[in-house]
Length: 349
Image (cartoon, rainbow, N blue to C red):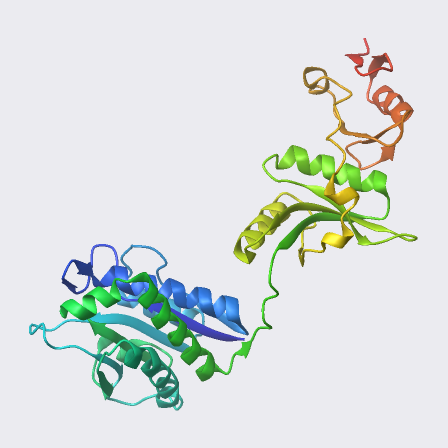
């Protein structure tokens, strides 16, 4: 596992270069966040560390300490340039002009050369690979590359730097250069959507309707249905929380479901595996009024297992029929009256 520190220059009370209505701190943060997202999405084997991921000030000493703490393999400092003459522009990269880590120049070559692709596409002049005594390249405890993407003082280049599409272009090639330097492996191509975000699997329809009921209570905003993971004669059922076109949305929902205790996965949609065209049973009605169940130290799973019985689970995770409910409540010191849609429950005197 390689560790890359992606450092957006300036931030917070330090705007960096300011010209033509553009602040350097905003440009560097946008490119940095996009670079992280691309590396995270497209490559494996990298730990990505950002000294700042929002508009806040982080001192150079704090950045150095963080870099040492994570034992970084590379530090990429992202900046935009400024000069008093607005006709001056271009892209350049810097290394320290003193002693360097053995691989520093090699790493810089990968990143600089890769960035020449969008730089030429954008008609930005390549000012070359340079060496200078910058604080950041001198202080960091690992190979450090300082990138000056373009000049904010140039009206044309400032307009380019503030364009989100240009920021994405620069970020993508920065990410490719870093990945090449660190020899990161490319992830397998993402399968096209739509995607199913699952909330659990079960071997019986009774149990899968139980998961469906849990899901409806926990996340009423989703559009769940029951499907097959494996068709009969030995079926495996799944609850699909939602069908989504975008993978990032699917990942966000899956993470949310995992936080709520569901065994969520993301799979490519399989319409042929839907049950009844995806028309799941309606969420069952509760068998106990909420105001009645609150003082009772059990949790009722409000799912019918057949016409006569109800599935329930107590605090110890035990399952049973409707009759088992009476036994559990009796053990807890409650008296139960009724066997219809509602129960009268009271503490035994």
